[in-house]
Each structure stands twice: as structure tokens, then as C-alpha cells.
Image (cartoon, rainbow, N blue to C red; front, top):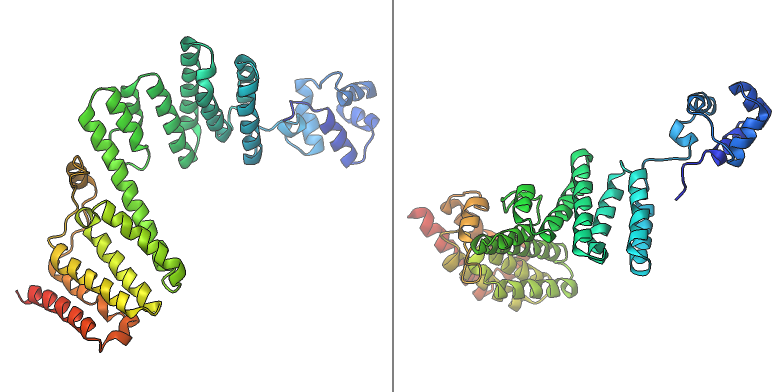
Length: 371
């Protein structure tokens, strides 16, 4: 990482346009010896000279000085790794002093500030004593506040808020975490586990449990949705699709998904049936279609998302935040009864077991419509 130094820039720019030191000196109104001293680093141009020289070379003053307020992502990564290693091998204050210089030089490079904040946080405990550690954590908070106040990169801001919240937790400031992240458990901004830790720190065990269960529930549903997408994308390749299905089925069974979100289980069985049918195993397809029909008839209605014995603090969270878009029970039943009519199952139309599944679902949907 180069310091502010215009010597090499003046040489490069002068040679680029093909002029001598004398010619540059004449244009700027100085003697040749002055230009020579600039190019050897003995002295630097006066501030009043910089605009004229930058204009002559058709570059910015920052470029003339060999300075940029930003650092590339790759350079930031390399710098972070090097400094992290230095913290383990060199005196803490020596490395921290170097870090401070870098921060001052690139104070508007917010990605770098984010990484430096993370670096400080990860190594604050090495500062030597509790008082110095607290000072370092306060420095991190200030860096985070600068990033969130000035950066336009929303994902970077989110990550920075997490770093700042971790600092407040380390400082035993649970209230500051809640003030920073808010108390909304569905906000995409905060890490809900940090909110849980803040409540724990404040002695509110009930809210801490609600927060951690909400975090687990949302992540569980996200993982399950991703598995369903992956399964659907690989339906035509049984070797790839079956392991995905089996893992999703294990999750559904382990977390009592039929109780938490029965719709997910229905989708799983239908996709599994499609997978086996496309894979040339019709008996397995019928087995899963039968499970799909049982869920449809016995478990789906009235449809609601709810907690269970494991997620025992979740009901209020679900009621307030993840209530599904309302649909009439009648229209939902009619739509679901059409699932077996998918062309994938055309070869099963005359299979007696398949016919029974179709009839059960049709009767259930028709009964609701007529009733």
C-alpha cells in the first residue's frame, strides 16, 4: 500500500506526454532543479502548484499525489489477513497503531472501515487489560456509526450493525443493542440472535426465548424452502433429487413440520411423488401421493401456522408477523384436488391405487364445495 507520494507520478506523467524536466519547469514557472527535487522525493510541490500541475497532466489532484480514498476489495482482503496474522505475532499496540493510520488514510472507504471494525472486535481481548479492551470496543462503535451514517451500501450497513451490536453486548449494554437493532423479530436488518442475547443480558428470559425461537423458525423455514427449490430443479435426475428429498423429509419429521407448516409437508410429498414418477418408480410415487392426500384431507384444514412443544414461545410471533395470505378454504381445496392431474402422472391413470387417491381428494374437495 503506497503512501502519498507524487514523485513517481510526476515522472510517469511527464514521460507519458514526452516532455523534459526543463519543459515542465517552464510551464509551471519554476526552475529545472525544483522539478528534479520533486521527482527524487527530496521535496514536494507547494499546495498552490498542485491544481496547475494536475490540469497540465489532465489528472486529478488525488491521482497526482498517488493517493486514492478507496481500496479494492482484493486489497482489503489481503490487508485484513495480514493484519490478523500480525495481531498474533507482534505487540498489540504496534499493530493497532498501524491500523489507525490505515483507517485515517481511507476514512471514506466504508468496506475497509467495516473490515477494520471486525478486525478490532476480534482482537480487542488481546489489548492487555479490561480498560484498554473497552477503549478498543468504543473505537469499533465509532467506526460503525460512521459507516452506517455515510455508506449507501445497505448490505454493508446491515453487517456493520451486527458488528456494533456485538460490541455493545461485549460492553454489557443490552439496551443499546435493542435501541440499535430494534425489537422487531421479522426485520431483515438485525440478527435475531443478537436481540435474544440483549434480552438475556437485561434479564428478560421470556423475550430472549421468543427471539431465539423466532430466529430458528425463520431459518428453518428458509432452509426448507431452499431444499424444495433444489428438489424441484433436479426432479428429472433421481440420483440428485432423492438425497435432497430424504434430507427434507428428515427435517420435516424432526421438527414436526406437519404441525408447524402443513403446506410445506404437502409440497414435499407432491414433489417427492413427481420425482419418483419421473425416475421410473411408480410404486414410490403412489406411496407419496397417498401421503399427500392424507395431509390434504386430514391435516390441512383449518390451515394455520402455529408453534408446538419445541417452539412454545412462537405463537404470538407467528400471529403478528407470518400469518399467511388468506384464501378461502373452498378454493384451496379445489386447487389442491387438481394436483394429481399433473401430466407427470398420466401413466398412472388406470392404476387402482392412483384412482382411489384421486377419488378421495375429489370427494373431499367436492364435499366442501357442495356443503
